[in-house]
Length: 108
Image (cartoon, rainbow, N blue to C red; front, side, top):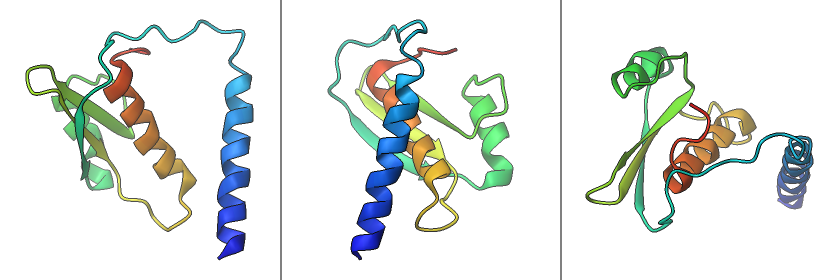
Protein backbone atom coordinates (compact mmCIF):
# COMPACT_ATOMS: atom_id res chain seq x y z
CA UNK A 1 0.00 0.00 0.00
CA UNK A 2 2.83 2.40 0.86
CA UNK A 3 4.47 1.67 -2.48
CA UNK A 4 1.32 2.85 -4.32
CA UNK A 5 1.31 6.10 -2.34
CA UNK A 6 5.01 6.57 -2.94
CA UNK A 7 4.55 5.96 -6.68
CA UNK A 8 1.69 8.47 -6.75
CA UNK A 9 3.83 11.05 -4.93
CA UNK A 10 6.73 10.55 -7.33
CA UNK A 11 4.39 10.85 -10.34
CA UNK A 12 2.92 14.06 -8.91
CA UNK A 13 6.37 15.55 -8.35
CA UNK A 14 7.37 14.62 -11.91
CA UNK A 15 4.28 16.35 -13.28
CA UNK A 16 4.96 19.44 -11.18
CA UNK A 17 8.56 19.50 -12.36
CA UNK A 18 7.34 19.23 -15.94
CA UNK A 19 5.01 22.19 -15.35
CA UNK A 20 8.04 24.25 -14.36
CA UNK A 21 9.39 23.77 -17.90
CA UNK A 22 6.56 25.98 -19.13
CA UNK A 23 7.51 28.93 -16.93
CA UNK A 24 8.97 30.78 -19.92
CA UNK A 25 5.82 30.39 -21.99
CA UNK A 26 2.72 32.54 -22.05
CA UNK A 27 0.66 32.16 -18.90
CA UNK A 28 -2.88 30.79 -19.00
CA UNK A 29 -5.47 33.52 -19.45
CA UNK A 30 -8.67 32.21 -17.83
CA UNK A 31 -11.97 33.03 -19.48
CA UNK A 32 -13.93 32.29 -16.30
CA UNK A 33 -13.37 34.10 -13.00
CA UNK A 34 -15.99 32.33 -10.85
CA UNK A 35 -14.50 29.03 -9.67
CA UNK A 36 -17.75 27.80 -8.06
CA UNK A 37 -19.44 25.02 -10.03
CA UNK A 38 -20.67 21.46 -9.87
CA UNK A 39 -19.18 18.79 -12.08
CA UNK A 40 -20.09 15.46 -13.61
CA UNK A 41 -17.63 13.00 -15.14
CA UNK A 42 -18.98 10.91 -18.01
CA UNK A 43 -16.98 8.00 -19.37
CA UNK A 44 -17.10 7.75 -23.16
CA UNK A 45 -15.88 4.67 -25.08
CA UNK A 46 -12.49 5.34 -26.67
CA UNK A 47 -13.76 4.75 -30.21
CA UNK A 48 -16.50 7.38 -29.70
CA UNK A 49 -14.43 10.11 -28.03
CA UNK A 50 -13.49 12.06 -31.16
CA UNK A 51 -17.03 12.17 -32.55
CA UNK A 52 -18.48 12.96 -29.11
CA UNK A 53 -16.16 15.91 -28.56
CA UNK A 54 -16.63 17.18 -32.13
CA UNK A 55 -20.36 17.50 -31.35
CA UNK A 56 -19.30 19.94 -28.62
CA UNK A 57 -17.24 22.00 -31.09
CA UNK A 58 -13.80 20.46 -30.57
CA UNK A 59 -12.09 20.53 -33.97
CA UNK A 60 -9.13 18.25 -33.24
CA UNK A 61 -8.67 14.62 -32.17
CA UNK A 62 -9.37 15.00 -28.43
CA UNK A 63 -8.76 12.55 -25.60
CA UNK A 64 -11.40 14.35 -23.54
CA UNK A 65 -13.51 17.49 -23.50
CA UNK A 66 -15.53 19.66 -21.15
CA UNK A 67 -18.88 21.41 -21.48
CA UNK A 68 -19.79 24.22 -19.07
CA UNK A 69 -23.39 25.41 -18.67
CA UNK A 70 -23.19 29.09 -17.70
CA UNK A 71 -26.83 29.18 -16.51
CA UNK A 72 -26.58 26.27 -14.07
CA UNK A 73 -22.82 26.58 -13.36
CA UNK A 74 -22.49 22.86 -14.03
CA UNK A 75 -19.59 21.38 -15.94
CA UNK A 76 -19.59 17.96 -17.53
CA UNK A 77 -16.31 16.41 -18.55
CA UNK A 78 -16.13 13.56 -21.03
CA UNK A 79 -13.19 11.19 -20.68
CA UNK A 80 -12.15 7.67 -21.58
CA UNK A 81 -12.14 5.03 -18.87
CA UNK A 82 -8.73 4.48 -17.25
CA UNK A 83 -7.23 1.20 -18.47
CA UNK A 84 -5.85 0.28 -15.03
CA UNK A 85 -5.52 1.73 -11.55
CA UNK A 86 -2.23 3.51 -12.35
CA UNK A 87 -3.20 4.91 -15.77
CA UNK A 88 -1.60 8.32 -15.22
CA UNK A 89 -2.24 9.42 -18.82
CA UNK A 90 -6.00 9.08 -18.58
CA UNK A 91 -6.16 10.36 -15.00
CA UNK A 92 -4.22 13.43 -16.17
CA UNK A 93 -6.89 14.02 -18.83
CA UNK A 94 -9.51 14.13 -16.06
CA UNK A 95 -7.44 16.82 -14.34
CA UNK A 96 -6.93 18.71 -17.61
CA UNK A 97 -10.66 18.80 -18.32
CA UNK A 98 -11.39 19.82 -14.72
CA UNK A 99 -8.99 22.73 -15.28
CA UNK A 100 -11.18 23.77 -18.23
CA UNK A 101 -14.20 23.71 -15.92
CA UNK A 102 -12.38 26.07 -13.55
CA UNK A 103 -10.74 28.36 -16.11
CA UNK A 104 -12.71 28.06 -19.35
CA UNK A 105 -11.04 28.02 -22.75
CA UNK A 106 -7.34 28.67 -22.50
CA UNK A 107 -5.67 26.76 -25.30
CA UNK A 108 -8.22 26.66 -28.12
